[in-house]
Image (cartoon, rainbow, N blue to C red):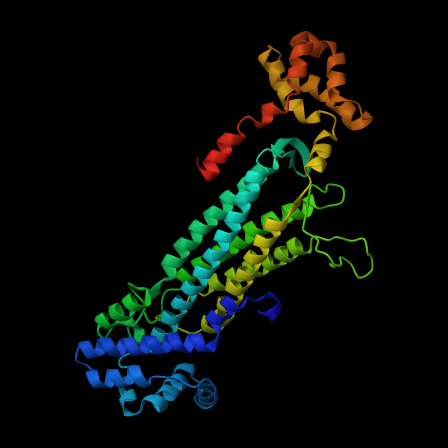
Length: 431
């Protein structure tokens, strides 16, 4: 990812220094286990633990010659360790190091993303409580439907992001496996105890059947989970973009002092954060496709997945980490305009109460077909002639004859639509 969309905390996970330190720890732990089994001398392990180190420019230089990153790494380590380095990598294959390391990095990335989600959830919850009873119009197909509250919109976002937190925790658990099983995964040259020892100390579980690689369905699940989170993020961003439209203006991204909205039009205040998040979501979603294509490898292993994962591991996690932090700031600082919400609610002159009148008529004994006809013929006068819905209903003798004037007026009570807000909030946020 480019620096513009990268937070240092996530970037550090994917930097060579972190990767090689994980490799070194895997190799050293494997040596410790081998020593316990009597395969290598205990004194050699002490030297490896004390002297083990690497030089990144040296690794790069060696790799230019040998065309193999793990061999280049082991050569660099050997230059620090000395003769005892001959015991490093005993019975292991490159995938043992690479795959186990990738699992650790993806766990580290998931931990940061879970922190991000917690921040987003806290911000959504706070704004939901703030606007629990802030009334606005609900829309379906972009058209005025019936009243809701802005707090209910936020509660919906919270519930979805809470599900995403559960998904990410599950994906983290399922990616947290390691493999130290040797060539084609048979443990022919290394005892399964070594795998158990290394995994226990790296916070992993042994992969039950690793062939020669950790099965990529785990990785596909992980990246698809990130894509789902990105899609939820975009749902929020698109809603805010719509609410900030000039004709709507029910909510607006915070516009800081000195900020400029357009190089050509000084009056502009554009939803640039939400639009940026929409673009970021498209990018993260796009990365789940190659992750799924990585599942089908040849036989016990090939490296068609390797180059893909060198991209999508850092790119997906870095992009989503940045985006969730941006989303958190957007929600915390979102400017809400309750007066505009009320104005928009009143714009259609009472049409939002049409369903209540329809139901009242059916309850009064009128067939549903006739009820719909009576309500719609008065509603169309509002659409086409700008009439007031309540006034038209009160002038319609068939409607008045079925319901009476008092019942019609009673059906235009806004509180009728909001009576279960508390129930919904208890479902989402608890007592």
